[in-house]
Image (tube, rainbow, N blue to C red; front, side, top):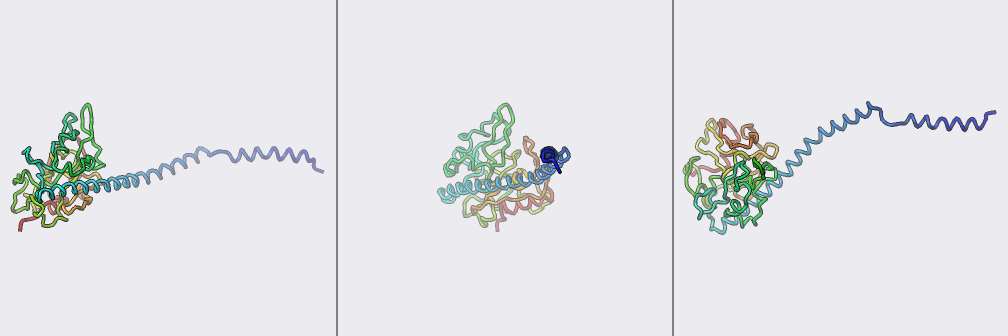
Length: 284
């Protein structure tokens, strides 16, 4: 006959051994789990970065649509007259004033009263500083007191021109100059505002050199568009719509060097061909 006490003791001794057998992970198991987490993170982070960039692109388009609305309100109040893209005449205000660079001591980079507020469309924009800049542009000036610059947007140099005068980047004719809203023959296909590359942005207008067009072998980029949105750039068109244009040539997407932009040959760059087609049209 079995001793009940021995049976009871055997059960008590068994329980601790079972618990010990069900202990924590081994080192190898922990390393495997960490490796899996690292792989998943590596797969998710690029997707999250693209999602963030896409969200910034939507905000960018909203800003340029608001900027375009302010520009249109000004034009309507001026009986269709378009504000100069750039002006040396203090009595003929351009759409925005000031000349940006990387120098933190230059007030034009950060002083609203000296730049945006002097522009002809400022009051029509509700004095909303943020709509003049793409949210993806977080670059700061250099120097002892780095600051974010006020503006990333520039205006099509052919829209308003330089006090309405022909300039070095093309003649009218053969290319159409837009000085009144009635000068647009295809508003949905003519851009007005663009996000400019941080190294290229300076005065208020973006130059598209039409002299070589349509000879793509001689294409150049006096100014360079931005590529904040996964290699794409925001544009606002004369009919009021905004869109994001994705670039295909690496020369259109130079890295930001925090120095002045140096124009270079853009021979056979299809991105320049697209710019030509959306900047102006030939006078019939």
